Each structure stands twice: as structure tokens, then as C-alpha cells.
Length: 362
Image 1 (tube, rainbow, N blue to C red):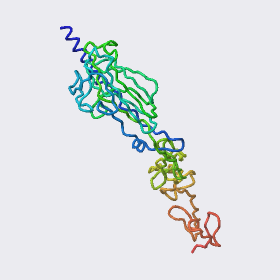
Image 2: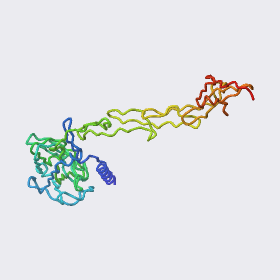
Image 3: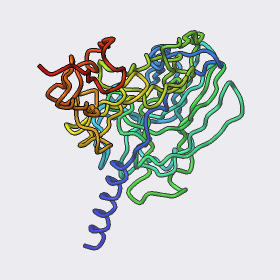
Image 4: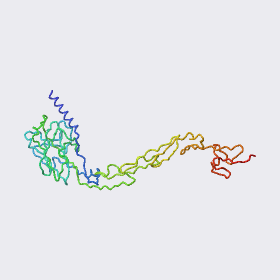
């Protein structure tokens, strides 16, 4: 009973590890341009060479030992599709361990940087320490180990999963990848089994031959530069400077710079108790002042009411003529002399504010 419970717990742990894996298929493709030139990410991606796929049926693949071909899902695995409809299984044959190998060979048309993924089904009965031997351009062998009870990525291509074995490796001509069964039943053994599974190999290119375009865009005096300027992925981007003005009921608060837009602010609206003292222009806000409620001097009176653009008008009252005198320019209803209002000066009229002339009474 306890043994069955441990087996179930182990199976749940394997599934949890499988679904929690977040390793991506391939890193972002990069087209590094020299300073002063660029290539768009879209054009860069279009220049990425097609991934190279190898399975057990490819002429360049070498298979050594009594591997069997199987299309049955492995225990506790969710993968049901395989590259060529099936995968290779070493059947956990202890007598043949260390004598069974699968070698994939990938050639490149030009010097490239690639990521290599070994495609394999996962399974609760798979080996936890499978040796993967790689050699780049005929150089020294390098060995990494992968755990086949899980997959680094559950869907690398067309629903098949696997594990990254080489990342950003520079290849001039070719790279070989060999899956070995050596010591898989000894090193970090799995009590459910130590099967070695091989579905195939896929190479994703992370570099390519590409053409960069010189940055030529120059912003004019009515524009400002947006973003980071000329970068490896974009030319200089210019935008027109926002114009502030009365038509938009705004004025310039902050002038534009070479890399920032102008900042406009809404014009101040005078209240019903104010008049426009100074009208706005494109670079200055409107100035309002409170309308006066009385004249500054007690001797003055309000001779004209305020307007939207002016304060009240105050004037000194004209003199009334004595009983023995009369005037050609009598005071108006507001108390101002007619001569002051129309600017008429008669030779018989004093040039002072007094506008009386002596005439005999009839």
C-alpha cells in the first residue's frame, strides 16, 4: 500500500515538473547592425534561415545498437505525436547500455549561430542522466546531461517536445550531436526504469546574412526626435511639434526641444467680474483683472461701464454755470462737459475744464 502511494506521488511530481517548464524554443533572433545603420525586427526575422530538422530516417543520421521504433505514448507523458510518426527506444536493455548511440549531423550553408534541441518524449520510466555528446566543426567533444523524465519545452515543433542541448553555438561548417546510453542505469538511476528516448534534432538559427540600412532621417525645425534616435532596429523617428494658439484656446507653456514636444496649456477665462487686461498670444496666457467697483477718487464718478476688454471709466464732473451765465456746451446727463466729450474748443470758451461764458441774461 505504501509503495503504491509513493509511486502515485512520484508520478504527480513528474507531471508537475513537466507542466511547470518555461524554457522557450529559441532565443530572440538578432541582426546586429553597425552604428549609424539599422534593420527592422520584421526584416531581421524574415532573414532567419529555416530550422534544420533531423530524425532517425535522415541519411546523415547514424544509429548504432538494437534500438526499437515505437509510436506508443511513454508512461505519464502527454505527447502523442512524433517527428516521423515514431521514436527510438533503447528498451532499457542493461546488456546493451553504453553500446547504443544515435548521432545527428547538421551542416550549415554559412557561418551561423544556432540553438540545438534534442527532441524526445518524456516519461516516468525514462533515464534521468542521458549523456549528449556534441562536437562543433570537428572540434573536441563536449558532454552535457539531460533528464528525460521531463522536457525543457513540451511543443518545440508540430507538437513534439524536447530539451535544449546547445545554445548560441557558433558553427562554421557542421555540428554533430550524439545521444549515448552509457551509464544511464547507474548514474542517478530511476527506479521506474532508465529508458533512453530519441525522436530527432532541430537547429534554430540565431544569426544570418542580412543587410542594414543607413540611418538617414533628420528632423527639421518644426519636428522633434522620438525615442532613442538611430538604433540597430530603427531609423530616427520624427514628429511634428504641437502648435499652441488661440484657435485651440491654448498657449505655449514649455517650448519644444530636439527630443521633446511642446507643452500647451489652456487659456485662462476671465470671470464675469473681470475684464481682459492683456490678451493672450501663442506664447503667453491671457491676463485678467478684477473690474473696479468705484472710482479711485471721491471727486470722480463712473462715466462709462466696463467692457470685456476694459475697466470702468472715471471722470471729474464739469462745473455748473452761475445764475448770471450760460454755456454753449452744457453738461450731459453724466455730468461731463460737452466740449470735453467732442473735443470742440470755441474761441469764447475757456480751455480749462470750466466751459462757462458770460452772456447777459434776457
